[in-house]
Length: 104
Length: 248
Image (cartoon, rainbow over the protein chains, first blue to last red):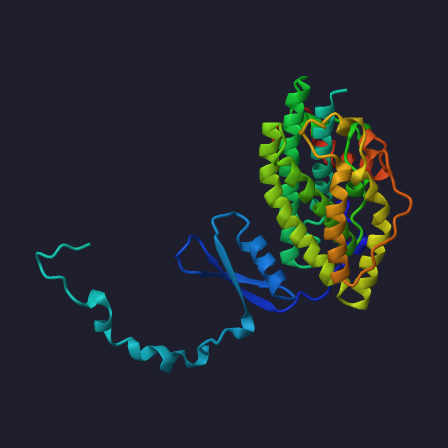
């Protein structure tokens, strides 16, 4: 490896974390792909492009500061989500399909 | 001498050698994201080189393909500018070198898209898209490093001052270029005003000082290289030369 010794101490500090959302075709939802470190928005976009869009198939990218994401807290997942558990009628599968109806 | 063959070697060798230099960063980048970014650019450049050298081999008509041209030529037969063969140095120096080259490359490929040589124009069209991203990437880094900390500013300015004497080769014109006056390739000096505009804009946004033109290196387009190219080729070519015809 011909890398010179002073390559290791390039930029120090990787900057804050950004969440990356990718869109695979026009009109499709932007889906969470992962995250990157970057000092600012432009570099976050470039890093996201290099890490998540380098194999093509992406038409649009969003980057959002991770600090801007408001998340539900894992400690409260019980009271937050459990009440829905015993209400199977909220799932479409709860209802039996009457005979004679074509199932798609 | 076949001027079109010579010219295609210049196009291919610039990119092959810089691509190899950037690949040396693989696993050594300052951050994971930048490591991947540099490797992406390296792969783009080596891909471009492969297209230009394949066409060079066809134009030469002596049965050499892109691998033969990349792996079986000695330094004296390489036609890249000295700027791209210099060692990477620190991250700032790598970025400044890439920026000076990328700005030039994007401008020359933009002209080559309209080349009267259809195959060359086709390769240029694909490469131009990549080069526009490369210059955006390296340019944004120059701005951040120059306008960053005291240390990053100092290192970036030093790199700019040290590399400036190597820009002359980008715009030098010789009989190879003059043979292409019929619309195959742009005349190198014609690219300089636009290049200076792009570069001075980024340099001033980076709060750096544009170096004064002084001594300019020359000769690499005719095969007179720095000592660094031989070492680079030794590493790049050893596998192909130790195992002739090997497939991997």
